[in-house]
Length: 110
Image 1 (tube, one colour):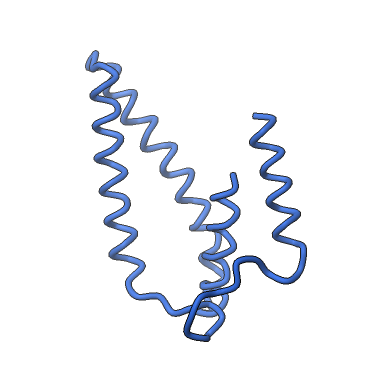
Image 2: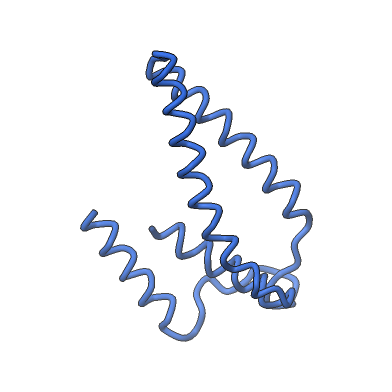
């Protein structure tokens, strides 16, 4: 949950700088696509009576392919704050902290 919140804030700030707020839904669509693809993969493996090791190996392979695709699509990024050097870790307002607590409690409850 923490990674999802942090990544969303990073991705959304880069999309805002690029003037592409319309792509925010695509960020969360990737999560749904990952769930659907992994479910389909495991359904195929279970149908073929594959063992747990095959599930791990194929899942790892799909993850590596996904990482490669994202790396190729991401290209070279410019800092969202427009200044060379590291970006601030957290925004000055408390909105991200509230989201972190909310997602953290959700994850803990889960």
